[in-house]
Amino acid sequence: MNAAIPVPKSVPPAGIVPSLTPDPTPHAAGGVVDGDRSPPLPTGLALGGAVVVVATFQLGVLYPALAALGLVWLGGLFALRRVASPRWAFYLGTAIGLGMYAPQLAFFWTVFGPAAAVLWLILAFWIGLFLLLLHRCERRLGPWATPWLAPVLWFGLEYFRSELYPLRFSWFTAGSLLPVPELAPVLRLFGVYGSGALAMLLAAWCVRVWESGARRVFRGTYRGLAVLAVGLVLGGLAMALGGYQRTAAGKVRVAGVQFEFPGLPEVLEGLNSLLAAHPETELILLSEYTLDGPPPPRLLRWCLEHARWLVVGGKAPQEGDRFLNTAFVINPMGEVVFQQAKSVPIQFFNDGEPAPGTRVWDSPWGPLGIAVCYDASYTRVIDRIVHQGAMALLLPAMDVEPWGAHQHRLNARVTRIRAAEYGLPVFRVASSGISQLTDSRGGLRATAGFPGQGEVLAGELSWPAMHPPTRPLDRYLVWPMLAGLLMAAAATFRRRKPRSTPGGGDPISCRCACSSGSC
Image (cartoon, helix red, strand yellow):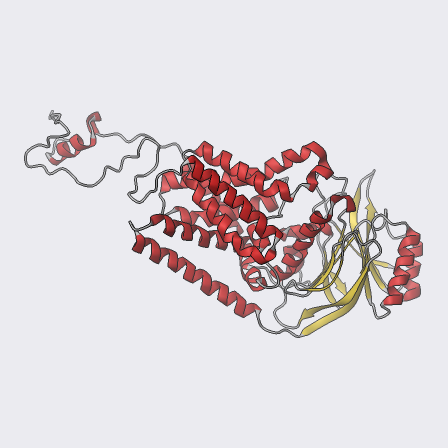
């Protein structure tokens, strides 16, 4: 049996030319060796980057005109993947998440008390998980694969935390921070999750090209510029498709009154005042929980006497003490002809049972969808309404006055995002504001402010003749993106077996022995 004779590493055997290529064995920290990998970020620089991410996020949320800062904080998150260790990536990402979300959701303390800290931490966890996955991808798959995986991870995590897991909360997705109606065509084409993933792709490649510096400037530049060019072309296409003028195919004169836990006499008085100010009104919408049960006979008689359609929020009793949080449709004959319950009751509240199904109201003016308050936060609910052919959306809502003006502004933002995303005009009446009448691009036609008890808003709800509402592109990418998220997580966390060499020798000895035919 031939055996390889050990040879000192510094002296190769005669006639054997040692390989000049770097040994591909992973270094001690794990991952592939890449001559273009940048060293880990120093602690001070990482902390400074975290401050920049939090500051630009806050500015982008508070001032819609600064929405372009979204590329800065997304790019900052991507750059922080280069911190020294996976644990540091997760802890830093979670701290960044707290800095992003806790100030914006300070009203949680008013609603939940000290338990608000737990909810802030749960939301921050998703930023920590994203940064951890990015860090692992960089170590295992290399720096040029990570910019392609970043939007997949971002899309998958945003969708999962917003739509699927039990404590789903869809505010502050990157796409929902886009200004409307200015960027409505982008939302219309890519959707709220797709727009966020596209922004992450552009931000990641900008950062990666900047990191590559002079060492691979040509390679990095052409890749990054190609991605930017594709993004600009798609964005231009979206603007072109969404920029045409539309003529109204259907319309209805609507009006609403803001009431928070009113008595029936107060409701009837408000309705009379509304008709006196806007006698042309055909359809009246009142907020969620205007009634503490089904419509009473006196309210049904009012609709009969004034020959008006009314949509009002109340409760549909079920077995025992259970109920459905329901929007009731009353016709001019004083009859309840349609009901739609809330599909997603608010967690931790006595908000009724989930709706057994979702249907579209076949109104005299055309098919109208009805979503009750929090339902508008979920694309899965509005997708079902749009799929059934709804041309406009009625949205009875309740934001309790003690929750504060900032909470009302945040929730009102969702209305305009949904209108722009689906090309679906929305009429929203909230108990203490902010009520809105939007066009199909998310532009405001009428509004009533906070707290605004008894305030009236009125206008024309109209929808276009061409291009009825459809679902954006990202709805068809959900499951591939979630699968990509799981595959990337599995690949980056899979334990690697240590590389072995024949006979237990070092790599140079092995290559020398194999070259002599003695392996």
